Image 1: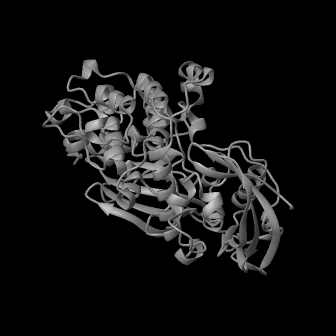
Image 2 (image 1 turned 180 degrees about the vertical axis):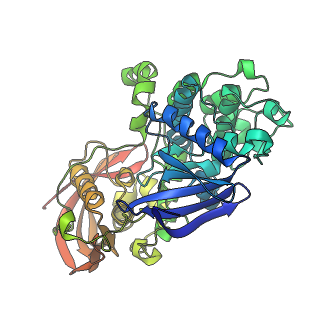
Image 3 (image 1 turned 120 degrees about the vertical axis):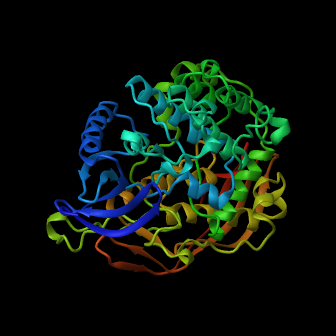
Length: 492
């Protein structure tokens, strides 16, 4: 394709094919979505018109669109942002379902995005897990906006997923804002239960579906899944209700095929299952009026600069852009375990040898009876956050208010900014012992060994770092609603 260098095929099905590409003008990594259309000239004109409307929405949860190219063989190529966190379909394929908190983090901003689309007169018409993508830091995005309309123009047929389709659309009606609300709620039901809603029976309460799913969340989804379009809430109202139903938590993107991620997933799942809801606070009561404007905060994290508390070396600065040739410039690696830039072995943390990581992290007496296993589980989660360059994973490591968390967030921000990666980074707990503690706080003395690892640089170089031992140090731990987390660290 003129103006682009095709690097790989990402997917192909009856709805077309998707290709990773580099724009030759500026080496910008993009995606080309090639779809069959009835009239390529008219379809391109409609695509350009739609993009002008989307540009005016300025929503951070839409996949960016940069142009439409008519191809000679009756196909249209849409030029889109490259999104590196994978699709919801891939995530559910690897994990089966999401926790209620992760489902809220996914759904609430997307309902808000639907509200913005509907206000601009745009109906998606083909919402599906394959078209919901994640950025590397866990931000959900709606893709394929307008694709169904372009493919269905002038008599073309669109093969939609009927299990997620509103009943009136399945019966032949034109997709509408109400049918978009239904489809996104059906996707939410799929996230929670691992299966689409059953059209043959009434959606039942959460205790029937699963005791771990709060009734308030299934209630709002049930209202969105009403058979009558007129009784469904608007997308804006649904965004508020979903956000207020359950405490949001960061979506863990990496594949469960990675042992490190399986540890993380089990820690999160069990913590969510055993945690006791906090009493309503004034802050929570105020959220309803503020939710639409602040909904993006569900999936973003503020970070700055700093140094690591176990690894004192900083990343090498990337060479200035002017000093690099175009052949040296590469797109930043994908930051999940499926990245070609990170081997699976690079993401595997040190083995946890003292009990189940889930039980150790959530059990109230772990600091006293399993100090080494508890601390190892926490530093394993920290190593995973660095390997994935994901600040949201630090929620598995630190208690609220932990001062050390800020330094880690700044390190990860620097790595992302410079296009650098941590390869083979792990931490090993040595000589851990319980110092003292109460029912919800404890101190553990331990030495931390950091075996040799590498940092990958944006120009393709790998910089070796020797092993390092720090300590003994005293870790102050706090028992939060989600389990034990690190609150502080100091010399004994």
